Image (cartoon, rainbow, N blue to C red):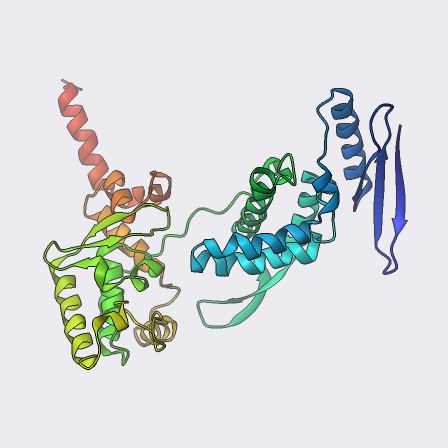
Length: 371
């Protein structure tokens, strides 16, 4: 037997409390924001109980999602990279505020689908290419990142804590995201930007941009470089902790080696009374042991170069785009950028039509088509 009760809270909000009672099984209940979701839960729960595949741990009835998130933020979040942890923390705080009061046993895929609707209506501040700050709705890609964050929390509850038997977010489909942005500098823009970086009063900006453009490395990969990672003789940089979790070696062009050599001499002169270990980062910050904050110097240079709609990450797109236009294949570009698959580099395929035409001509010649 199943019942659905409509309830009205003190603040006027309406919820629907669904309860399933079947002989030989303990009663099960859950709360939903609309009646349709409650009916769906009743139908699936009754079927699961009858087929003897419905069971809930005692822990899931004791702990709330808020308690789980708190424990995750205390124990698991610090194990992640600094940038990932900083991004996910506000996301997890949102989930805690939104659904933290709910018992884990009451969480369903429908619960998170409804929460996604509320998340999609959130307004966030965004700076336009013209420098204007506007409020806009959160993007599909960002929503997917929110769900990736909470999904890992729930996976920890399943596999490590034993508080849940299954992750309800796994059955929620990701939102379709727009095609990846490809903004790269024209030759004229590239010259203006390089000139502006050379003239910038922050002496680290030009080397930073030079390395990013010459290697295709990510912003945080460049800023996280340590002197121990750079081998001047072998002309390569070793990235010990890349985004995909794998160590990779990045060849360094001669002009970049020269620039890094100059930076190292400056560091030695500056720290003549101490040791190089005091500035382990190639791009040190103002605080001891910290990394450079490149944002303000970068914004000044872009403005001075009169370049519109160009972000720091677009330096990576510029490197990949010029590789494609010079005839490099997608596999080569993926190797340079450190991608495990070709999916992320397919966006550059249209930039190498001559290379594609040459490959097809070679195939035609080999098969002697048309003769």
